[in-house]
View (cartoon, rainbow, N blue to C red):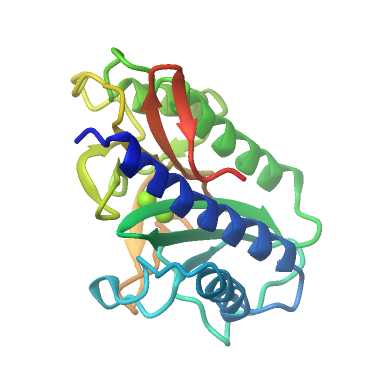
Amino acid sequence: MRRNEGELIKMRKAGLVVAEMHEKTRAAIRPGITTMDLNKVAAEVIERRGATSNFLGYHGFPAVICTSPNDMIVHGIPSDEIVLLEGDIISVDCGAIIEGYHGDAAYTAGVGEIDAESQRLLDVTERSLFAGIDQLSKGNRLHEVGRAVQDVAEAAGFTVVREYVGHAIGTAMHEQPQVPNYWPGSPGPTLKTGMVFAVEPMVNAGTPETMTIEDGWGVITADGKRSAHFEHTIAVTDHGPEIFTLP
Ligand code: MG
Ligand code: MG
């Protein structure tokens, strides 16, 4: 689906709300804070900016962000009982709707001081996201994104998750086509100006295999090793990729 300029203006606005959710939650991360505290910070941004949440109520999801610590890959439910500790890593996935248009972006941050290998996982995952974004130019094929992400992650000795992928985004958060973080064996659709995607590598320190916890939401690594997640919402433009979820 190609979005016209009027639609892209709304998606830019939604993206800026998500960017502020990132900024404010990042600033709040410290040892002793709970993941529910982060949810409150994010909810305040959504409300103040006149946006609505695309996460709250999504298939029954009970919060406005996903908070996934350490070996949790994605979809963690914020909780008063989950206290972040020095040395943890925490993935925070945020989304917002403005005038019917969606933004979606995630980051992983350290809590206090983290070990060097965890920092390397964060750095490589973020770098893999930007390698994927670099492929979002008109005339290129969509699945070059996944190839680029996978190349960066695997060259560093990490693995990419297969079961959860990026997606087109617009008037719904998850639109077709999907954007895998690996080479799927065929090049996918040709990119055109006005297409908008959420690219979101989930990179594991160990095995790419995943498991879902008892609450039916949280997805963890099968081997208990750490995982990182970075995501932006990006439009294909005549002048290359435009990231909507950066300030
Ligand atoms: Mg997301
Ligand atoms: Mg997404």
